[in-house]
Image: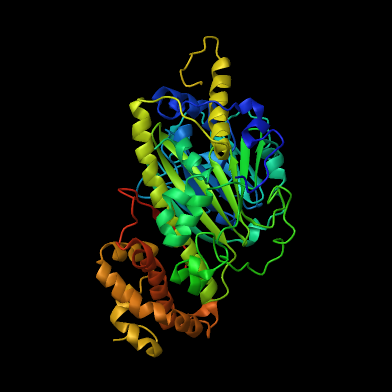
Length: 431
Length: 108
C-alpha cells in the first residue's frame, strides 16, 4: 500500500515518459569499450566537482586531483587576488607531473608561493605563468610568455569548485546544474566546515555505486542488522517509499522521510545512539545556525513534515545529501577502469561547540563507514555477476527511477559523442 | 603513569584505547577479540555521560591534554560499540575485503 502520494500518471517513472518502464541492460557497466567512450564523452566534457572553497583558505592554497577517467591530473589553486584557478598538473618543459609528494599518483595539498618542477627546476606562479627557467640561455628563442601552465575552466557554485576539461565548453556551471542546482542556492553549506572524508577503492563500475546510493529500496534489507531486531522486521515490512522525486535534465533527486532522527521510540535504536542522540541520520539535534528553517525550494520539495534527507545526483559523479538535522554529505565516484573506481564520501557538520556535539558527529561518521563497507562489498558481488552476462535484462521498480535516469543519461552522452564522428561505432549497450 | 584525568582512574586499564586517529582506533578494533571489545565497552560505556560532562568544563577549543585523551577514548568507544552492540564480531558483516580509509578528520 502506498504511504506517500505519487504523480497522477500512477508512478514516478511514468511521470517522465522518456524513461520507459521496461527492463534495462547493464552492458554499459561491464564493457571496457563503453567505458573508453564514457571517458571522453562524459568525463572529458561535463562539469566535475573537485572540492570546496574551504580547501583553499588563502592565497597560494592548492590541492591536486587525479582525474583518471579524464586522463589527467589537475592542480586547483587560489591566486593572490582571490580567484580560483585550475591547471593541468604538468610542467611545460618536458611534461613532468608538476605538483606531487613522494608518490606521483597520490593527491596532495598545501600552500605555496610558486610551483617548482622537481625535474629541472622550472618555476610557475600560482597564476600559472612561467617565471623561471633553469639555464634559460641554453634554450632557443624561448619566450616564457608562451609556456604558462595549461589552464582548465573552473567555476564555483555555492562554494563547490567545478572544473570542465572541454576547451569548447560554453555552458556555465550554474546553467549546467539547472533548476535543481538553482533550487539549492542559499543553503548554509558555508557554515558546515567540520569535515570527515573517506576514500575507498571499489571493484565495481562507477555507475553501480551511484545506483546503490540513489535508491533506498535496499536499505531495510541490506542494512537490516544495523537496527534492533524488532525495528528491522518493521522496516522491511514497510519497505521504502520516497516522498518525492525530481528529474531535471541529466540530474535528479530523491526526497526521503526522516526515519530515526530522532526515533519515535528510543528503544528502537542502539544504546550508544540513545546516549549520544545521534546515528546514521546524523545528530538528532539541529545546530543553532540560521538558514535551516526557511529551506531553498529544491530541498524537501514536497514540504513534507516527515522529511529526513534529500539525495541530489548531479551528473556525472557528484551527489549531495542534505539532512533535515542540519548537515550534509557528498559522494564522488572517480572511475579508474570499467570495473573499478575510487569512492569518496565526505561529511560536513557545523563545528561542534562541546564534547557531546563532537561525539554525535563522530558516531554519525563511524556509522557511515559501517554502512558503506556493506554497500561497497555488495557492489563487487554485483559487478562480477553482471560480467558473467548470464542475464542481460534487469527490471527496475519505481523507487529505482534515478538509476533508470542515470544509465539513460550516460548512454545518451556516449551516443551524442559518437554522432559527432563521421563513422559511428554502434555499441551494444543501448537497451 | 596515568594519562587520563584522575576522575577516570577506573578507565586507566583501557588507556591504550586513547588513540588520536580513526585509522588507529579502527585497527585496534579489528585486532581485538570480541571479549576484549566487550570488556572495554562495559567499562567505558557507563562513564560516557560523565566523560562528556568532565570535558565540557573546559573551552572545547582549548582542552587540556588529559581531557583530549579522554575524548579520544570516547571516540574509540563509539567505534567499539558496533561490534559489541550489533555485530558480535570485530568486523562489519558482509563487508568482505572492502575497506575504507579516512583521509580527513577533525584535528580534535
